[in-house]
Image (cartoon, rainbow, N blue to C red; front, side, top):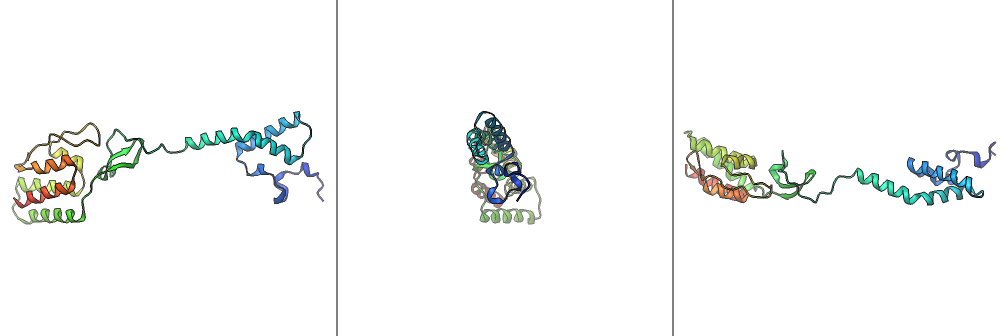
Length: 211
């Protein structure tokens, strides 16, 4: 009952069952399809509206899919598979040894962590030193070392022990000193070289008990 022939009515005004697939296309697909429809109309004999657009869409679909795939790939994050040559930073440095290249939010090699039992032992050792009432350079240094392990400040701890920073994040600190502020830290230095918080805890608890 429309005053206009069906071919002249925009697709968006047609009933839902008669709307064409072109309305579900993205803008680049829509433009490419319309261009192909115009070109087909110049070369081909008259076809039905649905047949022309269907043929045009079929012809342009492979190229459009390739363009869409390229665009989607460009927006994707790089694959988190390649180890980064740089050390983790911030909070990630406390829990991760190696992160993915270009993805510092992805940990490829986590560090060994302190257990709740080790945290309790360190806290008791530190409290005992502080409650002793006599502050000495040795006891102050022991409290400082315990605090670094509790805070998971591994790089600062290695620096406190004079360890040589390795060239790659997954390598162990080496050439650590064996004495700091009169304290025998040989066992602690060995534990730091192994990056083992449990061994660090054992060494610090024994060190605190000896003061």
